[in-house]
Image (cartoon, rainbow, N blue to C red; front, top):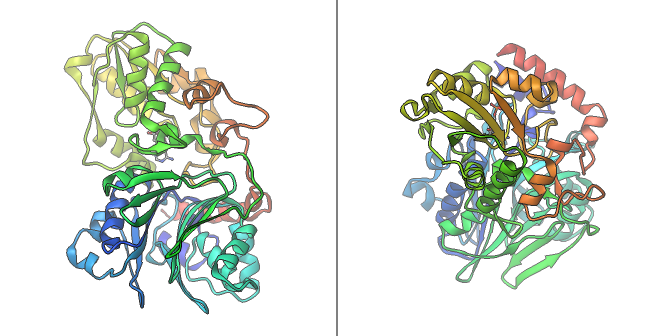
Length: 492
Ligand code: AMP
């Protein structure tokens, strides 16, 4: 029911506001599809609801898109062999609030007067609803309910001649966060929004060029890391090599700090920094800021592991696996209903009872969103006989939703937006609770602290300072969307 309503009724489909995605592209390799499948595998953590790929063989475009994991769609030889060509782009999609339907799976593909064009997007456009309304009024017929399709229509209606100029013209009209991979008949194009909120890297494999959300996707195919695509840069890769364009006014980069906290894979290097090392340093900062005596430091697996290593090392307290994770269960956060989410947590984690009984434990997790995980984990520790349970969170309190491409629930569902520290401590049921300070987080990313005048990252989820206009929210489109969401939620 919810699915048909979200598809039929409303052009402001909630999917367009909850994208956490991974993108990948190859230019000039005979195994482009197979390499893209591998790259998407490495980026699976960025999106687990659907995967898609478009290739070009010099005459025809080929595409395959499906719900589910990369392995569900691209593991067979026949799937790969149907995707002929030397260029490919691929996309992993993740949306939690809305129903994922096939027509929303990326890459999107369009036939323009200049030829075929495919696009994959990681991020979220904050004026997509507003633009979409204008485009629909002017006669655009949308095929999907993604924000990304707005870019396709802006390209179609642009008065510029070349595809690159039309693409730039389109991007100058959109607001929000985007790392894009696009493909035309003779080029692979990568773009990062003017603040570089979402990541995008350039790599090289023999003569081929690669674009990927994270460096772990270069590693899996043995490609060399060349460099980050810069904030506000468009790279156009063709038979003539790489053209680097800076079509937007230059702004200081403000990459998403939450990528370092949770979202990116620890073996990736972002903004020149190892994500794993950064997370360990976060643990070090946390131990310095909020030391407590205990017998062991226990990570909430897997996301709390690097932080707990850093914490244990700095505090001189043994690091122990006091919680064992069942790896055959997906991320709890993905489950749509509260009921399933509760069930998921129990399925996913189990206390290492023999080890924690009678002990004073420090639990380290990367973040608290709704607080569901923390409540359950602490309950589990108490049930297993832990004498004292302390919780240390490797980020500041998440008090605000992200509108730039990381899925977070609305503000009213964020535990830290509803309660102060003491109320959270009680609700979670721990002896002590502490979060990392904002400056501590910035220090862990190699900065002296947060520059209040011009923060070096986007930290809106922690600070509430949104560096890119939230036009749809401010213009009332969000209110319309929210009432629609409530309606859908009520049907579940
Ligand atoms: P919660 O139970 O809602 O407090 O979820 C907190 C846990 O979810 C954190 O420990 C993270 O590991 C994970 N998490 C945080 N943010 C996200 C996100 N945007 N998507 C998926 N998982 C997340």
